Image (cartoon, rainbow, N blue to C red):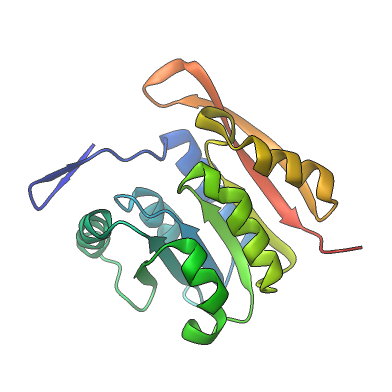
Length: 189
């Protein structure tokens, strides 16, 4: 739970997920990171702590209030606009224009923690707009609960990804099983 500017914010990225996120960011050393779903900025900060100086993180949040809280928390944590660009826009409106607006050719690392029903749509948009390259990593949180079954079905059957599931439990409800999907883009063969 975070409090910023008098606004109470529940940070939904679990500590265990944060550790996996940091480890994978350190291992992959991405130049361009796209986070879909900033919420209060907790995962944004976990990602930013693990980035090298050459990296840039684009964090996308469609809710203006969440973005305002996240921006305060991110800046209070010592990160500036040179490392983290907070974008207030729905992901499906941003992705088609991401390359031209931000001068990004490819995305090395994607963290999805927004609307679960949007995971598949946004993954296909990243593919359609050629923003992924061989080796790009996509982490999708909460794929079991509340779940993203169409996303998982697509990933398993399309042949474009190597994937594995990191099993976890919900942070405050240990009896509820969840998981985070880790995908590595291998392209179209």
